[in-house]
Each structure stands twice: as C-alpha cells, then as structure tokens.
Length: 173
Image (cartoon, rainbow, N blue to C red; front, side, top):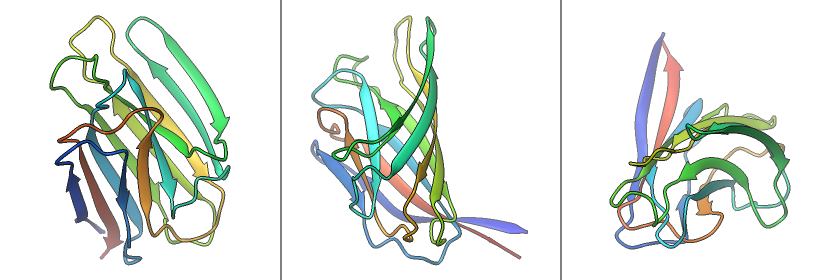
C-alpha cells in the first residue's frame, strides 16, 4: 500500500503574527500532518494552541508528558471556552537567539463523522542546561470534518520566520 504526503499549504511569517490559520482544507485525504518551526516573539517559553473550524469552545481534551532534562511532569485538561488544545512547547524571546522550536502534529481521519483524535511531539531548541520536550495526545469531541486549523500562543505572538506546513496524507494502492 502506497502512502502519499502532499503539501497542501506552507506559511512562513514575514512579520510576527498573533495567529496562523490553514483554511479551506480539502477533504480528499485520510489524515493530516502539520509541521511547525516556531518561536514566540514577545514572551518566554510558551505553549502553542490549536483550534479546529474556528471553534475555541470547551470541546477539546488533552493529556501530555514533558521533561526538560532536570525534571518531568504530566498533565491533562479540558480547554476553557477561550482557549483551544495545548499542542506544543515553543521557544521564547529569552531562548537562545535565532533558534526555533520544532513540532509535528498528526490528525488521523479528519473527515470522519466521529470525534477527532490527534497527537503531537515538540521540542524546544535551547543552548542551555535544560530544554523542554513534550508529547501530547488530544481529542476534539465534535463530529464535524476539519476544514480549518488555527494556531495561537498562550501569550505573545509568533516570531517572524516561523514556518507552518500542512500535509495531506492518503493511503492507497
């Protein structure tokens, strides 16, 4: 069985931005993958949040584990009405200069009529004794097909040159 990855859209920020959205996602693939190289322009180390179809209500659940080389922690949550999924850790403006965190998010069966699961892994790139790595799994409890994905930060804005790439994945013969 051949599996194909097709770049649907690539966004590289020419200036800092409070959010990034992939809109009008076609429904011709089985799964989606998003690859981020991002940095927070206006705050310390933070969290990337993800919302589907413009919905930021409390329809998201997640579990995560993380470590930074000195300690480890885990957590779970249901997003509040004004936030969306916590998906990734992001370098801040106090991190090593000119470094960007890296994240990958996988969303299977994004057009199904069931709740949508997703998984993410992310690392903060830091030239220091500690740097965060995070694994997150989540569920969007609504049953609509995903037609847009928006990324925001818990505080601050994405730095210039942050890059967001959306891929469609299709399994076939």
